[in-house]
Length: 394
Image (cartoon, rainbow, N blue to C red; front, top):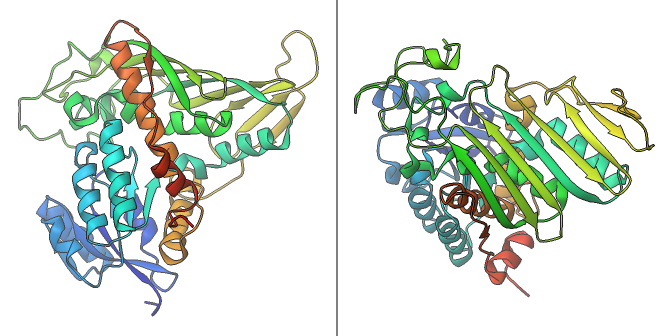
């Protein structure tokens, strides 16, 4: 282990334990020194795997440990506000896995705590580090399609019935809904590509497939192999969570504060899993074909003409190793650098908050028959603080 390694404490070692793996780089800047998880088998197994000196079921014990330099919080969404505020108040720099919170107010509480304490807060919107998103953003910034005016996003979630309807994600009390929990990444990317934040939204959605399928009894463990053995077709899925009251299909329309019009669609019973982005500007459009390394982003910027499948230019998504196209490793590298040095980051607590606020307002809209809702703005002082890299004002 290198003498300069940051000792990282990890709270929550479930579906996103790959973040802990990415953070454990002894001799290369960081290592996992402490773990906290409610499951004793999980925490002891992971502590042994990482050589962590502390394994606890009480996260406050990890926060009280003076050897822990920073923490990664990857617990269920409804715990983010409490645990993040405790960590920030303890002076521990925080990596908080998305979404920032399950309401705009919970996000604002976290941001106010970071501001008040001066403790550094980083939000893990790893799609900003995915090759396909960086490529699309570079094409837009370069001006290949002119000024963006509309963004259309389709999200096909083939594993949705397994990943999101067999555990706590299916309970709106813990997520608000999947138009917030699952869409937070995409809303953040839409904001990035469009150069603005959602100001007004309306949405429709429903529970069309998973509402009537067999569920487990309350307190019954998830089935063995639930994320290794997937059911098909969707109507064949069994052993769903005992509470299922979030929508499995949704459509969202947005007007951004810079005038851009955007649309987002999400479905959890498709046969394939990928995201499709279309951005149309004043001088052309781009579209991704696949979202992994080796896939392409195509640009159309001559015309007018009929549809041309190949477009005017092909740009290949760069190759990368690791989970999420190498994004998890890159985002942890940025977090470690941020803990050490502070300053600007590619991820943005402001955008993280605005994606949650848009998702919450959209969920309210779809449950009110599509009534439009305004997205609550972020307090100007908080916005300025985070946009200048969490430095005190001059």
